[in-house]
Length: 207
Image 1: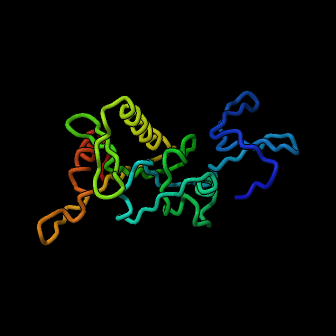
Image 2 (image 1 turned 60 degrees about the vertical axis):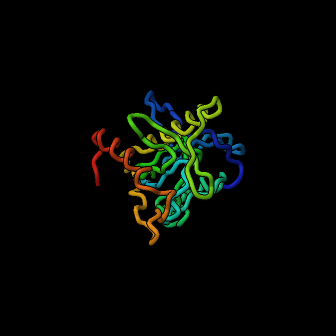
């Protein structure tokens, strides 16, 4: 989808009043040359997409590609239709909370990694060291701010769907090497089981 020159982006899900009735438009622009508003409503065709937290790190073994940062990538992901492989509808790239904040899709699949785990009745937070293990987020003032951000990230991801949502919690990798060590210690089932059980206890249907 190309808008050309002269457009200034105003906002997503913008409320407009028309003949006394309020309605939301998906994207609102101002054209500087014509000096008029341009509203784009994408509800004519249902839109789907895969979402993941920015801190998620171990979905590559499941062939999940994280959408590269940058406004241009997010624009194509959200605006292109089903004929364009960059579209969210292709379900090939997972967007993060930063890229979808303020946006809505009809149907969403949220990928839940080991960065936020439900353990013994509460949430615990972890960050991947980029090599071989997850480390707990420190219980310091800076760590508390990180935990708030991570919790809010999932809150954003879980509120992007208009009609339906699927939450995907991986099974993890339970296989052992011939020597008896975990094949992938960064994706142990124990990292995910508590979160899966908790979500299921809330009444979320298992599929």
